[in-house]
Image 1 (spheres, rainbow over the protein chains, first blue to last red):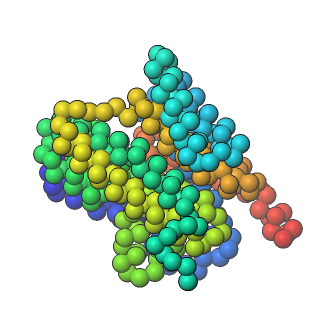
Image 2 (cartoon, each protein chain N blue to C red; image 1 turned 90 degrees about the vertical axis):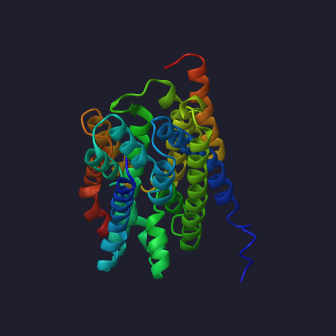
Length: 102
Length: 231
């Protein structure tokens, strides 16, 4: 890999990041459009949760990962602080792996 | 005016973001160490983290290139997994679309976490702005510090999975997204979108399933007319 490749990725990623706000600034954003855009981002984040929890490189991730995420999700639903949610999720997955669960 | 140097009211944001940064730092260490172990000069991973600041894109490109896939394919993979930032930018772009330099910096620093933290602030624009800048700045420092440590650590490659860090990220997103799910339409769209993503993930290249998930928005389509009428 060369510095040119590094710069190319940096530029490509920057342009992707730029696309959203530029599109936004071109239009007058109605309240409904605002709601829809926020909802879209939440949908993507939600999909990121399930794909990250269940898959690694397109295959099933094994049980320890979704189990940890589920524990975190349950705590979040019970209104535990973000910190508790994250640490509990990581700890659950780490302990399950330590115990030999895939 | 309240003193800006004492972040009393947003203390939870600083605390949560700092805690998150430990995990990001360790992932950064593994990125730097992996690249170095593969024989790349130190300035490649360091330059990538500094200029790209996109963990999944960097890992994706590195993986393709190291597997012998070539630079163009690596570049394509890196940009593809990044496309989810288009809806992110649409949703939170107005938070930094002020002066030219906040536009530049804000665009450069758009990541999953800054988007999620900003959206979790809901209608509170001031808090959303603070959440965006605070989380992304802390993550930036952690990511680059981690990469540097990984490069310097040489042969030692930590496996973030041992610490369950791969579970920490989705759990964080759940906690941040949950308040938005009180809205019934959003909940419906998210559930439908998640189902689409899971169904397509085994077949589509990484990065696409979360975008196809946007089809989940259609789940709320018939409800919109009725809702608008009742308002």
